[in-house]
Length: 211
Length: 215
Image (cartoon, rainbow over all chains, first blue to last red; front, top):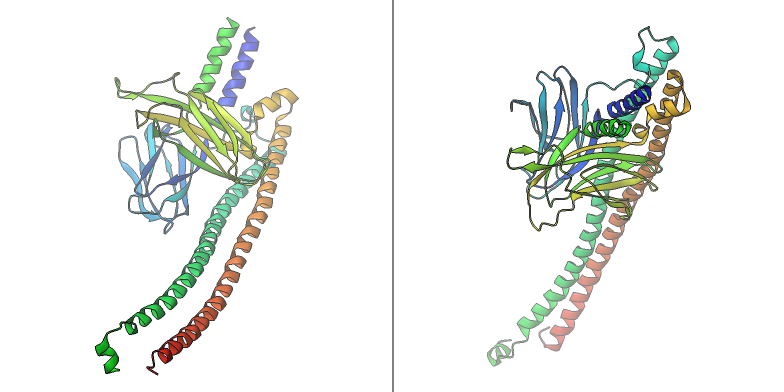
């Protein structure tokens, strides 16, 4: 009964570890809004916050990283893309705040990636006391390279998304502009003729005698 | 006794879901966008805490609130729409590649803002959803075999993403070509309309002035 319970507890414990380390979110920040994300970090842990504005206005946003003692560790105004890494000095809740308060009508789509600590080793791999064999170390470096590939893919996807949404916007605007301008020309053309006819249609005897 | 032990461990597991968190009002709806290829599994873990005005902090667990999770696929069709308890996990698998929108809001019946809620959220996509500990235990894999399994899953995910990238690039190209066509048609049509308008105006006015015996 004891060993069964310890196996179950180890299972859930390892499952717990595999769940929490890196979060990527894409959210919409309305105009004049401010949104903060908080994370509880132990002291001595490295963490990285990265963000990219995908759509909206001039593709820029204000960013602030606030330490648990309310000190502003990093502040950037109107940035499109940025990445900030730090080793946490104190244990506590760190806040990453995004502000779109300078914009009056464009809401922004923001991608944020917060990584805390390094990735945990696979279950079972971490318990090695001896050095890794060549097979294990090359598979480990394969894994790290693939992580980088996934990271590059994400950035490529965000950039492509930015370009594509701009192109779709442009397409729609060109269509609306063309239709609008055609209607305006027709209305103005007919309107000019009607107004001109109006000038000459007043049946005043004095005018008729004059002409 | 055994049941108590397992339930304690389960509670420990659930309490470790806290990673990133943010605040929303009780009636507010918060949405996140996940752009994913098809046949990709997404797992989200969340925990909601209610603001406690007595202590000025958040209650460690608030069993009364429920959280409504709604997931829409790129064609605006609802993939998942369920109310979960204050703490839980939701899972869905995408069948169309594109932007899936995950919306969270509490099932509060109030009409205006109400209290603040603290929502802990964790979203895992694709290869990150694999439960390596469980697989290792079930299939009795060695560490190296488990690592190879992980690499296979990662490469599979990369492959799907590249495929999706091709589809997106095609869509982008079609949009640009459509814009090109529209600009061309617009300039030709507008020139034609201006000429026709001008000709009609002159003819009409000439007939009008001739009728008025001014010309």
